[in-house]
Image 1 (cartoon, rainbow, N blue to C red):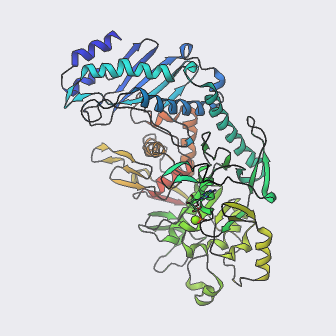
Image 2: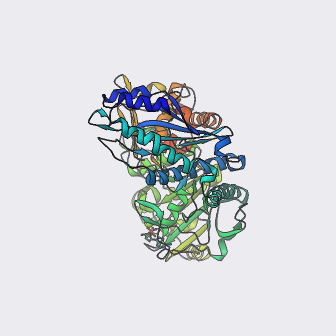
Image 3: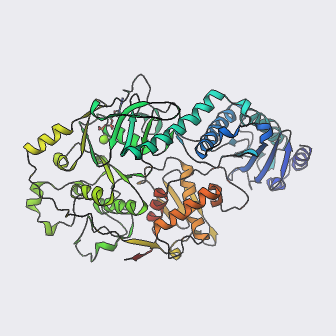
Length: 573
Ligand code: ADP
Ligand code: MG
């Protein structure tokens, strides 16, 4: 403490660079160590990175709160949220130029993700925070720095990093809720289901830009139709009833504005665990479910879209289709094939964001445009083959075409936000009113090809310097390139985007992308390494663990690589 004090009074009034004297140092303050991993170069630069570490003898978290792994994730998430709240109460904020006075932590959203913001093990607990070291202009404000580091931080530590400082009921509920969701997702597999929505779940959100639940007074709670009602048995909560969506092809139909897309969006996000009070904490979807959209304009690199598209005008071969500017239908086809390659096991598709000509070609259009002039085999003619050959189920929101009744296993109708099982009615209608269309999909889904990314095609540098930067959750700057992730909807936090950017760089550095591993082999290798060594290994700054990564799924890592416009692959037959 004395040492920190004396450095701060020595550099008071000096130029900002003198803060570098703190960098790499560790100070013992009462119960905890304050480690300055990085001191920023000026008051406007990204804030300084600081770790606060307390030995477990003092913090007193029992091993049951962080074993097994799922509990550790939930506990870290809980402490990170508590940190965000307490920082808000304790830190006095701006005092000087630029980011002077700022204290932050990487604040989570509605999902409980694996993060690097807090580390907990049997030896210690460590929080990684960001601090704007204070200055007036470029002149160090030493006294204000002392206020932040020697008064505010100890206060924050006191209220967050000791088990006794936390609300045990809330903490335990947080952990149990996460563990229950993990368990329910396991039950899905055992029972041959792909999704489950508990009765009473609140699916609608506050707004299109606010993921918190809609006001309880306005939202209509979910209620399963009797035909689809099943029971899961999470260990802590106990038996819970709700709608089970079985494997196969499921249609969600209904009038406009009756809650179809809201239901699908809840399923998209429920590949992750939700916090208590979210409304979706008893909604679970198979972990490798992938939302598929049309994404015209995206680049595509040698993807075998032949199952859906062949005989393109002026295009030789759709078994290795490339485009700098794909259309709605070709982009949607590529998204599906790439997701299969990356290991997706369920597709979630909404008519609102699909290419119509990719989804359907009705009888009259089949009559007018002969088969040999239409390159597209619509999804309706492949959705069953997808299930039969590859065991990939589909949930499809569709208000506009009854032709799909023929290929669906289940038809669920949303009516004023409540589901009904209308499978029998829909099948009856399909028998009575034939669609007359001819199935164009053949017996099998079609061949899949392997692609091997070539490392020379990925350049993380801009000039000499490595430049990788997440911009929100929708874009990553990667060297000179910009990876556009707007079409990748299941990235739910900026910190996942940040991790994806650095993961790609890590895979290059470590020669995991080596010109002989295929894309799924690359993501598998990455996942094994992350499981074994932790997410922070991807940091480009060794020994300075950043506290703002959240773990992405392999599906999104692959999706980002596929959207890097310089990517070149070798096709393996
Ligand atoms: P659709 O896809 O059927 O056209 P949406 O899912 O987009 O309909 O929902 C339309 C509107 O209804 C949205 O503003 C949504 O927030 C709201 N909404 C959806 N589900 C519910 C619900 N259970 N309770 C209250 N409002 C809801
Ligand atoms: Mg909709």
